[in-house]
Length: 128
Picture 1: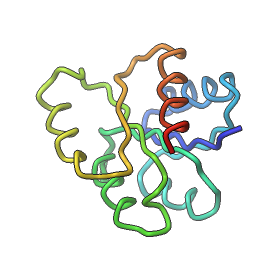
Picture 2: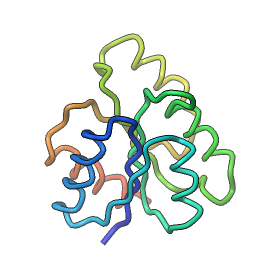
Picture 3: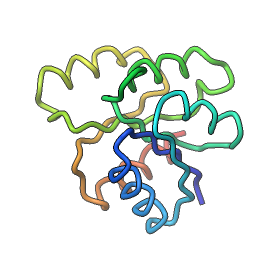
């Protein structure tokens, strides 16, 4: 059973993601902000992070960059999640910023199908 940290400032989305992860056989932890995610990471062994791009204060891109620069967390794979359409310029710009980060292993657009999310998680975890 993999331990996955879901980070999203939208509480309904966060709860849905965590329930989906549990239904898929994973153990879910949650954080409502980048700052809270760091606290969870310091207290728990996490196998993968689902990280929302658009969050107030510290966005997901900055969190990913901070984690990539921290030797304690840089090997934890990250899947970016966003309500931005994948084909939008904003989403493409966000992905461009993470291209050189080894810890970012993919992205998925909200809303997503449970099967698609779990399949992407499995691919990333098998590649680690």
